[in-house]
Image (cartoon, rainbow, N blue to C red; front, side):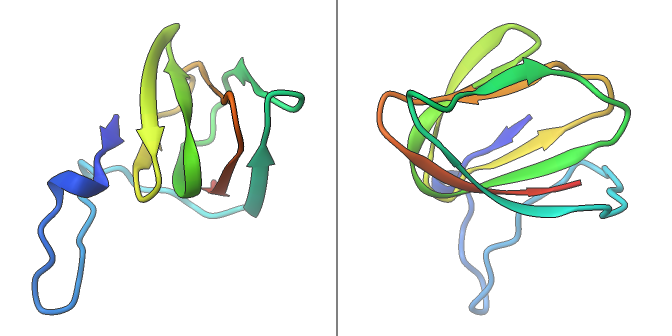
Length: 97
């Protein structure tokens, strides 16, 4: 699931991203940089993850379906969902999982 930053209204100084009830136990917090030379190849694992696009734009693949993402988007990754990220430029993003 991709939560589009532009679809969320700011209320009381907050921008609440809905997670659809997903519970994520944080075992790692990683700031990543993806470039054309360094794509994040599709893979799957048992740990759910949250990816937050800090800067740039790219294309996330979820179960083989490509979807454009931009700064401020949140990608919610359920367990065992195949996921990856590539870009024609540069994407800085945070992975919690």
